[in-house]
Amino acid sequence: MAYLLEGLLAAGHRVMLAAPKGAPLSERGLRLGIEVVDFRPWGDLDAGASLGLGAAVKRFGADIVHGHSAGAHLGAAMAGRLARARVVVTRRLDLPIGRSGFSRWKYRNGVARYVAISRCVARSLEAGGIEPGSIRVVYSGVPVGGPRAADPAARRTARMSLGLNDNETAAVLVGAMTAQKGHDLAVAAMARVTHPLKLIFLGDGPDRPALEKQVASLDLGERVLFAGFRNDVPALLPAFDFLVAPSRHEGLGTSVLEGMAAGLPVVASRVAEFEDVLDQGKAGRLVGAGDATDLALAMNELASDAALRGRLGGAALERAGRYAVTEMVQGNIRVYDELRRT
Image (cartoon, rainbow, N blue to C red; front, side):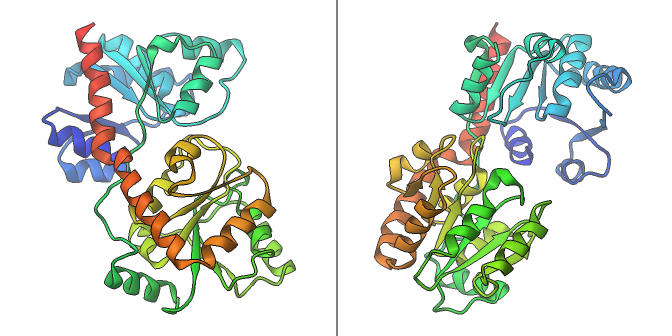
């Protein structure tokens, strides 16, 4: 969302941000010089928060209110109605819409356009009863032109930060440690990978204790490493030879896009948009969802073939341009402009 804020400002739009006071996004908004309104609803039915937001939107004179999370959905819709502004809500999850009467009402009222971050998210909205004509697909964007694995200096610096030697082959899995991301599948696959390879987890989460036990039980403590949460992931990606994304389900998979922008080939499960993102395997390898054996075969193939990694990584870097931040910003602006014309 911060990239969108910056892009809107650069395009000459007036922007107000509603977010919890003191949150990183609010602090970034203040640094950008935009007006920030404290918005922290305790739930969908927090009428006080919605009334306050509506008054702020009306005072600011906004004609578009854009909600970017499930928690902001209803508040944005109510604020838009109070301020007579059109409402846009971004949906990021490839999960079914709730079947309760309240959920159906929430999704079918007060929102002029839904922005889905991928086609599979758009399909889940349609399956939940949202009119296809009110859905627009705007892919999440990642910065391109940053540190790349092919840059020896960037690679050396990143490897030093992670304690990796120059001659080690290393893969990375980036993301919260939850069942969705498939860390357990990656650990199981590592037990089957025969080529020398280290796998580093960048991220943290509730499944970490169970994953640490799994690693210990398979005697993988020297091959699977936990680096914890890092706020410098783009600078660290050049340290790696490829990225692993064994997700069980995804909205889009921003970490995959970030890896591709760094020139890394990707091993990903056949879920969400990964087949299209990886250009049907031309920018990496696609494996069966939930299949640790298939994952291990693909990881072993990339770990053992530097020339293959180079070809796939080059294709990944070129493909990443489709998902640049500039494309995401322009996609959202097109949605706003469409609503202003109607």
